[in-house]
Image 1 (tube, one colour):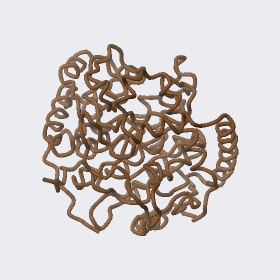
Image 2: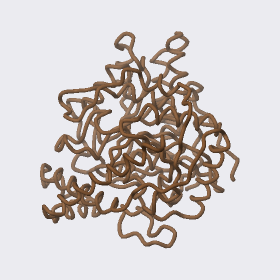
Image 3: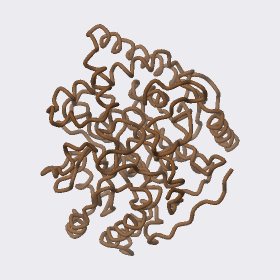
Image 4: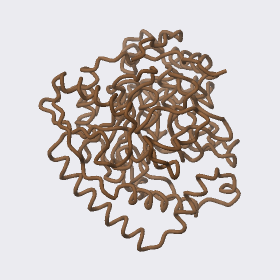
Amino acid sequence: MKTDRPGFTGPDLCRLTACEALDALAARQVSAHDLVEASLARIEQTGPAINAMVTTCPDRARAAASALPPATLLAGLPVGIKDLTPVAGVRTTWGTQAFADHVPEESHPLVERMEDRGAIVIGKTNTPELGAGANTFNAIFGPTRNPWDTRQNAGGSSGGAAAGLATGEVWLSHGSDLGGSLRTPAAYCGIVGLRPSPGVAWGGPATNAFDSMPVQGPMARNVEDCALFLDAMTGCDPRAPLSWPAPATPYRDTCRQVPGEVRIAFSHDLGGLAPIEPAMEQALRDAVGRIDAGGLPVEETAPPSAGTEDIFRTLRAFGFWVDARETPEDVTRHYKATLRQNIAEGRALDADTVADAHSARTRLYAAMADFMTHHDVLAGPVVGLFPLPVETEYPPSVNGHDSRDYLDWLRFAMLATLCSLPAMSIPVGFNAQGLPVGLQLIGRPRGEGRLLQIARRIEEILALDLRPIDPRVTHA
């Protein structure tokens, strides 16, 4: 295992966890202005190497620091917002050329909620076009690079968020997830990404607010910070039909409680859902072994996952078609080939195929809900291989199995999405090349608090160094 962890030469404030920064704010040891300036300095320092925060809004952030609401949860902590989510007065492109110069007048309601709770938007993080793909690049801003090896990709579609967190550009960053868009970049960049249950953090896309597959969620460098950020996102809103009330006990408080007896299921391939490279399987088995030896018993057993890929592909394509029908042609004509393919597949579906997928999804959920009554969490891969060169849109094969398109290597993300189960990626170690290893943890229905609680205990057992790093620049 590679042990030469990169150092950190950024502002000292950027070394702090989000919770430590809040403590410093509460003690008046630092101000929101101090954090804003530290964040901006670090973005300028690391931006050329990783290209994570592609748009900054320094004047807006400084103004927000001077006009903070009193006694808020985040108290003036700067955050990144994924460039799929509008922020009033800040360039928002969705990674597509038709909106290259778009500046919205209104923020997304989730951004409004976070700002009401003391978040300061420092800028927008890079994403693939419309979030389609797990390699973060687009025709406007180019690629985001992996901070642990800048020759490699950072995952996607929340790649800018993950890379920026790993290098200390911000303390918390917003992401979204349909097919692993929070979890894959978290795994590849060595940070924490949580896909909450539908409605916990706002709702589905504006064109299809009842779609439960795409969600928004928190990303951070450790589990407690992730729980804190989830608290800042939660709450019922009548504008979001699937929105869910905030819990009586904040997620951060639940996260910090002793978990008691824990039952962990582990499957190296999630019941044969997808292929996995031997090096990734061994890295996950090593991590699970340490977790078991640390006092959290692990049982190797396979979850019910038959039919997952077909159901997911059908319903995802249908969702893309629903969105595309609401989008003008002068926008869609700019789309990359893989995105146009997704839309065409959705348009070609017949009613029986969609109906069959909904019925099969219901049966899959029932089987998984029963499986989870015997386990607190299901642990397994986030993806089946380590990062590839940033120029490679998706792997041509995984462990000898050819990929037909860019969805093939994301199959491990599909099960939690279809079953509306909370799922997260947590860092559990490094491979021989010094690249992070992420472990996926899937929780019970609406079980975010318990999932975070167990993830934090795993974090304590593994005792990894979760501080930010300087990018390991390995490209010209």
